[in-house]
Length: 360
Image (cartoon, rainbow, N blue to C red; front, side, top):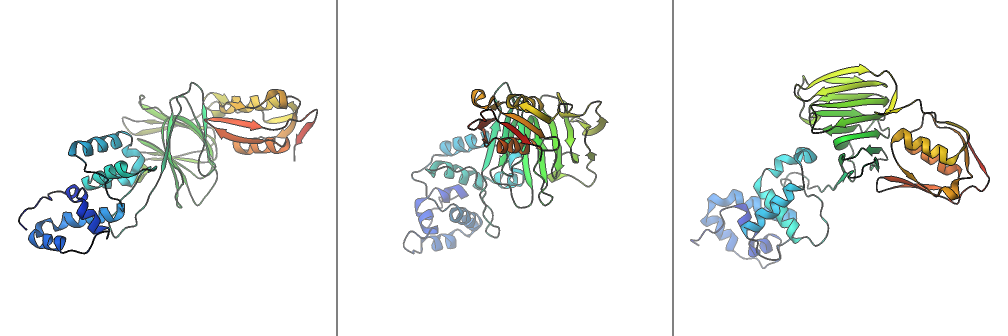
């Protein structure tokens, strides 16, 4: 054996006989054993290719040209962001894993969101991410995997895993959004926005993280919020941390990574909406109740007004989250609600001339 046609890891991955041999789909032969004896200097790349091939467990359906590989890798990179992957970034910078990702995209007939290939002594994992951008000229409401809610302002974008891991809940935000986080002391909730990180357990707050501005803002409605100047994953011991309580507001100077805290003159739910909006209702028409919630959260709620117009609500919904408020109202009138395309939809049979009392 005098011809060495395998200079890079991708050369092995694009060779049919190599893939068949690694996956055990071909008869045992001495070719690859003889190859290693003839070219011991290639042993490291050879074993790297074996690890990748075994992890992928697929075979390319046809030869890929270098230009095709580069094009697919470029397309894949264009649809992803370093911010979204956190610790995956070290693997992505390793070219064999980039080639493996291109092969996955080329060969898979089904849907593959993201694939993380780890060394043999680490566990292979597969995580799917959801990326949502509000392209409307009104707010859009998103229900996260843990039941938390995010109200995206126009042009805002949020990225989150379809299933949060067992230790913490992480989302990435570009733009402005209001969050109502489901309380879970064992799984803190993080919002990453480039130079700023927000950490909470269960609370409601608003984040402004527009990329075209020199400052990011955090505004707390309920609960306790920790704000970090910088990416929490990479923070040093001297990273600036600020704790915010209800009705407190922090501004991060992105150029100097400097945090400033102040107290707002008026309590707020959203940056433009006062909590002076009352959530105590007494024989209040259902459409009025819904209108109050819409104004407070800046969202749109769809329902059949002709069917629901006779419903009247008596209830105190002062301390509940948005999800809890909707649940109580809908339970009282035997209706259902769901989140669809950034909106809340309420469906029910109506109340006739009934009055709804949910004071208990």
